[in-house]
Length: 302
Length: 265
Image (cartoon, rainbow over all chains, first blue to last red):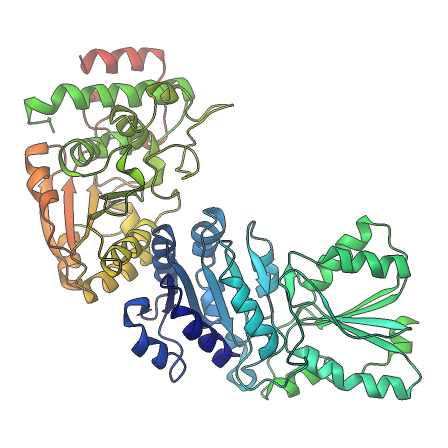
């Protein structure tokens, strides 16, 4: 996804001379080709995230389209008040890109995990929040990000994420995408954990459960039209996200369904409001938090 | 400290009166900081900057950012007198159905370059605008006004480090050095502020921040990155507000307004 990000920027920067890439000294071996080709629209601001968002604001006020890239806890949280005032409050065209979403940097430890980003990003007025599940989603989200002046937070993982989409799938910011139809329950997921869920489906099928899977590449604005359809069908829903159980996609969906007096049974799997003190890769940590092994659906919904 | 230059006195006195009037009817705070920076604002808008209401959107304009956004009343008065928006808006400060909020909101009136109110943001935003001017080959200089208390914020020094690294010529930081912050004097040692900027790689100049004749040459210098340490007195221009911490918080009552207006005749 990091490669997809810089590839899209490279392609578009040729025609769009307002694209500007900023990094607080993060992106070794990723950004060199951009920096070499467009030195006038690249700046390594040093390890100083607050200043980086402020610089982005100054650039955006001057007509540029700045993309700020770092590891997610630093590109969004370290400079959160700058994101609040300089991106969201001033409603500036600043795109904050956070790598290492969830536990992507697993063994690095909790300083480099992020399980709070959806919560703190979505609560900012004006902010669009996306979490692509694979490079196909990432490409289309970045292409569309160039067409909106709204501030955005985009959570990435690392590189070489497996594909969950066909090459010709059309992803739209703000819209859910149904990957598989199913009659019994609908799983809703966002971000790279979605790939793991595609691996659950054959197993659930063997258990006799016809399971649908829909991916939400956008956390905010929420695709309420899609949820309306689920409400109408009174389908059981399982929401899975690599985020704190508090404040993420699941809470957004539940809050909306509550307002609509939905009759659906809803279950929600996420990180149980805890930091990881486990040492291991993403898969290992997800497993420790009950987000990797195929869940016992019957038990969950009983 | 008195205002040395007769030529500018009556104009800046009018701005001071305006600030007093606004603080009085709105019962709002921060008169001290408004009075300590008003000579700097006057000098920038009337003697230095190439920017007016027509040029306010030009990419080649000079840019001013009030990073110490709590002193918005000083900027509003200056902008209104510089004809960026009607003077009658000054009657709509900090009140219900108002136009001008206590801290700057760029969506309100012409001439506000960016919203501010949280300290330590303006230096970075201004640097971003200065970099944009460079990269777009636009004319114009960027001036950012901060408080000495604001220099407690680490983000200020993040911007200073980068500006020095980039040798950002079109960038001037002005410190309204009035020696009084939220809870008093010397909360954080600041007497070596100029040396600090110099150590980071800035050119520095120290001036009397109430003396237009000293401010003009300092602010005419377009060979930044430059830090202008403007020594000022909080509450300057009115005897009973000068160098008194309480005027960071109090608003003048009827008698105090009358007395201040009399002093500013």
